[in-house]
Image 1 (cartoon, rainbow, N blue to C red):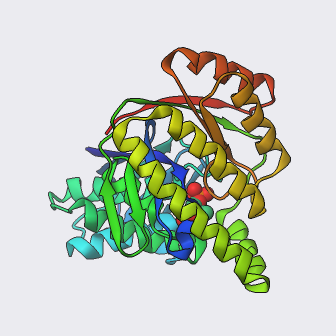
Image 2: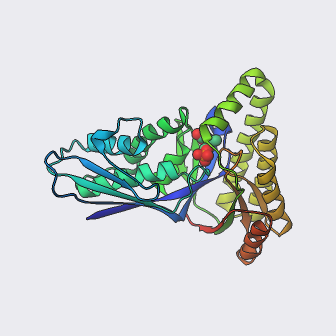
Image 3: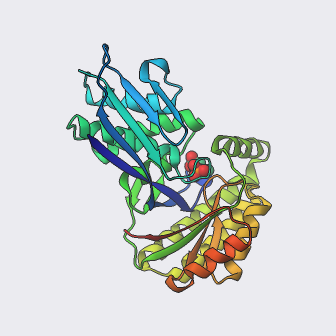
Length: 312
Ligand code: PMV
């Protein structure tokens, strides 16, 4: 039996603008994980893979699904990359505590954990870069034009400065970062939000381009603040980033309400995280205000809250 796990993720600065080639910063959420266990599945004639996705109560053989199924596609891509042929059947047991459709990277974490679990099973040395590239192909199934930030931060599991198709650089944090996340109660689909923004951008390019550029400049400032450990500035920049995301039309009242509640309870700054139109918001806090802010979010209607310490 072999097992691999992969973390969730949150975007700290730069979502959406990253699709238009601006930089962004993402962090792994190491406390939230997807685990994939590989074990032998005796009693079958033709060797295949049995996918047992416990959380969604679905199980099926690989040959029953085509490559539109993200779990089957991840498993096939991993087997192809390792150039292995099955001698007997295997079961992949997938268990996750990352909420789906919430902007926390559950899809990419599942892909990364499937790829790594199969690599361990076959003693294949897949580099993080290769794991990320394979998971990116699966991400393209989910949302057509992903920037690639989710699969990269999850495969490398480190705070990351990212520019689409160009740069990914681990960030060495100048100070520990404490974050509180709250789910606003509305689920959201990244592809829908990204596509709607693209329509608005095409209809009215100039103001959108200007906002993307402003976000890019803010991300560069955020990157420096993370390196120097200036937590006050990190909070202020998160507030400003949320304002830009509101201007882009990707926030909604329930998210704004949680962002305001976090700030009133003493957070250093707060913003929506990920595609928006639902899902999670994220607040930077000091170690001592973590619980107060989490409680304020629950009082303001957060479905559930998470606290995390980000390490580099
Ligand atoms: O998967 P989400 O909801 O965290 O969204 C990813 C962030 C976007 O910038 C909106 C899309 C992308 O591909 O980078």
